[in-house]
Image (tube, rainbow, N blue to C red):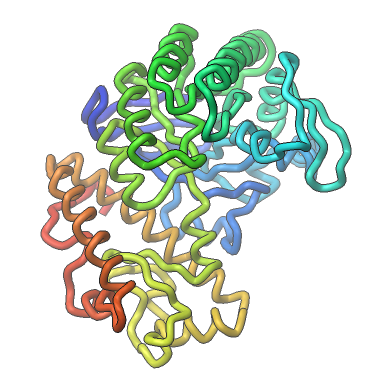
Length: 401
């Protein structure tokens, strides 16, 4: 089962919707924590549920190599294997193909690569990738695409885009004739607007249930990223979900939502948590900094996560500097909760008609807090205790509470 219902908004502006799958319904805009190998790093499924995570992302390439999709299938599918009851989206591995560099060779048939684990050769075709995602039991799968790096020439981007289109047709044929996977297409074309338009228009003619923007956040400027989003989203069917792959920061998310994007994934909340960087409504803080050595306050006094309710910045700094494993879990709990709160507040602002104000407030506070945090004796942390921050003065009452 798969359906997407648009609740408010349309076209290329901020919008709210409901995405229904076999494993539950989630509200959009939504953010998916990344569980590449069947686990969101440092967090359990129980943690994710308590943090109000609706959907997670796993990676086809990595699960194919280890432990193998056939093992997962025999053990009841990825949901049962990892103990997660909510929806799962699986990436096809196109970005991993890009990152393999000299270890892979792309042809019309597919991708011949050597495993990053043991060097063993493997061939993955577009058809294989669909069948693997079906074996995993994905709620949403992605077509195999050729993700082009940056910089690249127009000709290189055109060749990758054309191959992506041919692979999309082959993938769709497998869905229609063999395995009933809900499959999203991926719009490619580098930073070239004419190629992005051509790719989006042809993919829309194939009638996929959802569409993703791939090949962004690979080195181009933010200006180019959002120019591309502005080019593509008006061309996509309003009644289909739009997914910006692999992004991003809180500002990335609010800027993409402003341009009509519905779905996101990124490793930032958990990766930054493991590196001691914590997101708050007044900006980021580096918990390793000496200013937190005797700070008895929570990361963010307005955050209701387990970490903020129970532990001080001083204790979190101690754990992080001591390399205690608990540091990674507590930091990740807070960061994932921050991202979920951000999405809930965006949905509330869209429904209340106050999204422009919310967006402006977010941008002003993050820009100001980054300057303060970098200055000697930065005032970002002090301001958090005095009130204010990202949510100040913004009416964002949400149906989700």
